[in-house]
Structures are given as structure tokens and as C-alpha cells.
Length: 90
Image (cartoon, rainbow, N blue to C red; front, top):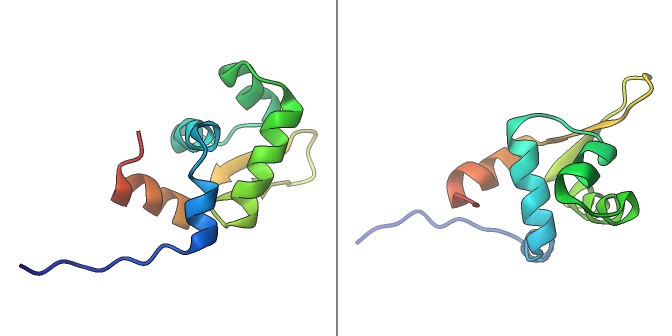
């Protein structure tokens, strides 16, 4: 039986090993959000969201969209979208 071998690096596995980071990814699946919005949705401190979103940014799962406006939005990168689609993170 044949299968397609997918490679996920160690840093990515570590990044998605946290239930909180998985929840952030799930929320970002629908639309870009600010740290404040994520904090409100998850009912946790903004500093905690910021720390965890930084890990997702470092592993290219999430990106920052800072277009010079007042708010900075975070969204899934193509790699993050691929993780959602391929591995069906729920």
C-alpha cells in the first residue's frame, strides 16, 4: 500500500504540541484576528496570547499583518493553512 510521506520538522511539532496554540490556529482559520480578539475569545491574558503567537510566528504557521494602522492582525500562513487542511486539526 502506497502513501505520501509528509515531513514536519521538530520546531513545527513543538509549536502545535500546545492545546492553546492549536486553539489559536483554529480561531485564525476563519479570519485574521488581533491579540486582543484572541485573548477575548480564549478568555486568557493578552500576554499569554502574545507569547504563544510568537512561537507560531517563529515557525511560519502564523504571520503578522502590520499595515501601519492602529491594529496588528495575525493570520495563518500558507503553511498554517496546509496544517489545518492536511492534518485536520480540530
